[in-house]
Length: 582
View (tube, rainbow, N blue to C red):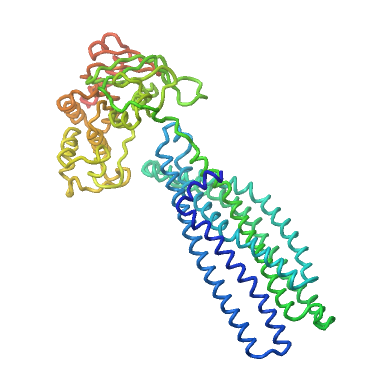
């Protein structure tokens, strides 16, 4: 785990090493100051002159300034290194997620990934900051003060042999009790974020069904659950403070009382005033260093689970990668399914697709119909290798898709998925996802083919109109047409429309299909639709049922031989006749 996280330190490695060195200088200065003060007190008690006092005063000022300089420098280098480490960590996680296949993404929920890149990274950043500064300062201060305490205090330093083991045992018990709670609470954070994300995403549905009160109760339950666990953990961790304070003041009382007794009884021969004053300082430094270490352990305890969750993301390998000596050119838009079977998980009881054999000529228009759950979308997602087949093979341009460079394949197979997504930015910004170098003329041509140019021209800003996140300020049909135009800008050899015209009227749907035939005749076009009218004029229509190809043929052929197709056609036309009578 540490090796994986250490890779994200990179350019901040020098600062991460420099910080402990600066901390060492700060600690040395702080430990020498009490020793110097003790000598000054003894000199003053012996009746020294002003020259000695001035000399000691100058030494103390220099040491104090050096301690301050080391401390400020350590703080700056520590802050820069820890924030830089967090930045690199988020960047590495984001880049890794971009490489994931759908199968990898299915393994993590979106809310979990968001929590890992925000809350978990902050926890690890805080732990890293403490490790390179406070975790170094604490042990160094403890060791130096402990040695100096025995040098200066003799028998007085025996108090440390009692308080240090006591604090160590107490701290171990606190961590042992708190660790399982922190592990549990981060999983509940995922559930809480999931609830928020689902609610905000489906806000229109929540309001239309008047389910605000139900959602509030659901969120309150999840938030209370997180709060309850955190409260339990914080109550346990809070015991650390009083325990530390008790030991600090008990140590001071012992040093003051027993030290005063030794000073008076021995007449300053065994322990003098200067030694006792330095012992007070060293005892305070020792106990404060233990408190620092306890804070470090608390933070590390909290961050351990976060670190493991981050490493899970960074260590996950994409199930889809480009092979060595990958094919870098797609010859044409022909597609072959050869005895293809597929299931989403190895644990799945049944295949989503089985025994699929199909040949599509380059430039053909293929329609796909079928009921819900017939695996229409699954079939087309194998073409751009969004998933890999579990049996058989899929070929594009006569080459197995697993032999292609992934970027090459996906640039030549454009998919307009069922869930159309637009990003925040102008219409031009969104269109350039299809081709970042597209000219204004090319964008307008693609929009005319997708029947989007007409409504874009009605906007005051036209192609510079701002699109809100998710395309919330345009209608469903407008969103679909923009997504189709975006796909066309790729100039693909295969264009797949996965129910991508469901929100447009039949006239616009027909115009889009007419534009495809006239302007991109060499592109293979696969249209998944619920309406027979959307695929009726296709070269061939595939009827799917239960993950298999039930029938294939032209509209007239299927009307004769396919009971499923006839039933769909008849039900839709009867519905249309009924609507007309009304």
